[in-house]
Length: 124
Image (cartoon, rainbow, N blue to C red; front, side):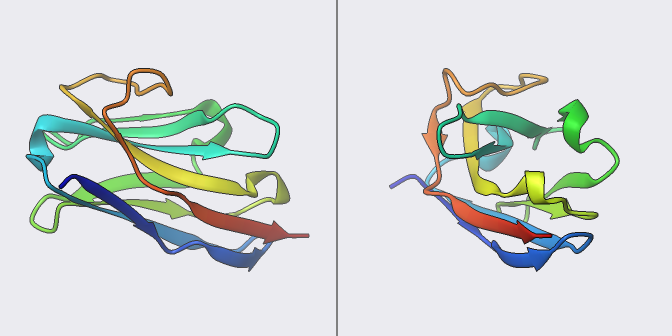
């Protein structure tokens, strides 16, 4: 059974940090690109960061460059999103998703697997 399980969300003050984890199982981890997405109520899910677990290459949306870092631990089949200098606008449900292959950038459509999401709330 394929599973992507996010953890690490919560409530943090503006300027603070959180680290999200996405634990994967049920598929060959380094055959997939893993991405972090976020979704506000009433808005579409948008891609924030992508990592190709095969070679570690990454892609970031402009809105998070310099503040968020995506990484993977292939021995643990886990992808992380380190989020620093958080802003109230970063408040959203954060999802991880996986797509077979090595796309440079993951987008919402065409993903193979999704996690259930983890809520991040940044207070001002």
